[in-house]
Length: 289
Image (tube, rainbow, N blue to C red; front, top):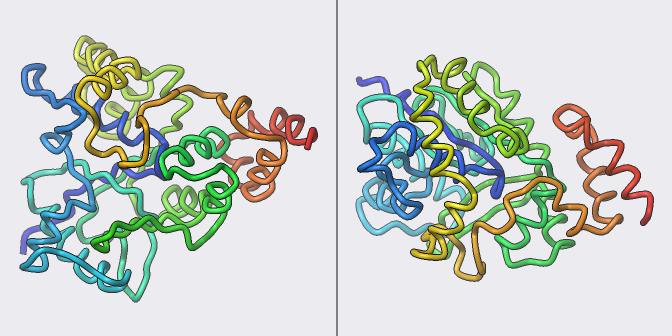
């Protein structure tokens, strides 16, 4: 039987920079003449909720009425996704790496490695709220809930859970070859961050001119321009625009001291590990509640 451990997961909690990384890598690895726009990223990579793969896995148009039913079909759908290319390839996921109903959400038998993109919860919360067309307090409650799940009308699920559990499950997954990217570091120096990933993790010799081109093509300004001109098929229908601020520190304008305090309290241990530089400022800010 063929070895299907071909998937390199591009994993993240929603609104953490997953799309940005996909666009950047697509523009680096694909020729300029065939590099995809934001609506044709499937030329380079795919996602784990591609309905056409679930249709094939089920043998008819896919629909499911429960997470257990979705998970059962997902096992075969992911094998089809893994087999869709002969070598290692990237697959986007927002799911937490966990087990439910005695099934792996991220099955080891199709997994080669993973790149995990992490974003601080203070900036993530307002962006996730816009993505969900929800108010900030509701969104923060969702980020703090282990029952946090996104679902479609046809029964396609994305098992998120709490923000800190999502981070910990991926960054501490035993035996998983893993590279971690902080969104904030990408903002500060995208070329350096991607270069490190290519050289140190993927063992790819970096072509500096190609990387410079990819960084420019995947700039936030470029992505906003594309969305304005051609729209973005992955944008939720209720969301005004997918690429909005794209900066670090917007939480100072978007969140109240009480909301910052809530996030600090809920995610203290994970913040200490991944964002120690934010502890002092957010403590002072939340003291104004």
